[in-house]
Picture 1 (cartoon, rainbow, N blue to C red):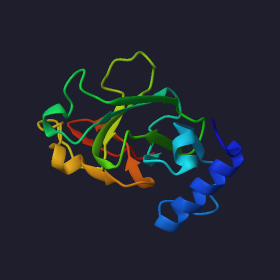
Picture 2: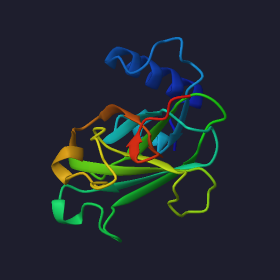
Picture 3: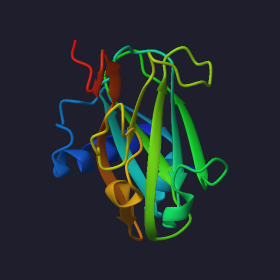
Picture 4: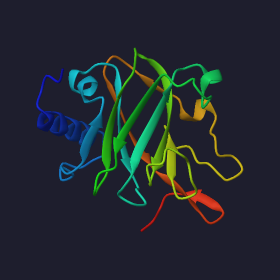
Length: 172
């Protein structure tokens, strides 16, 4: 159950992100989606500002992994999954509840056509924004790992897309 109206959640999230330098108070049009109640209640969670959309359509799929490096990016080993719609404009804040304080990492996919398959047009990113190449598309767990305490951890993620023979942020 959400204890505050969504407006309060958005306002609190934006003010918190402004304090971290990830947002300015003028960015009030940012959507807050996902496990909103966890961020609202100050439970262990991560609030991720997703930016750099190639196109403002499709879905964002975020897969959360626990602190065991052997589980990282292994099929069926994610501990939580959040899917949200891409907003019609601007960035999106995605709140993801975590089971308890600890170490985690996530992989994020921007599924442009919502076909649940990764195609050459789709984008993606990993926690901590590690760089990736066509030859090395999966970062090591330690490059993507982050720690969550008893409250909400905040971070910014910039989406990456295939551009010719390289992978990088989309520039409009």
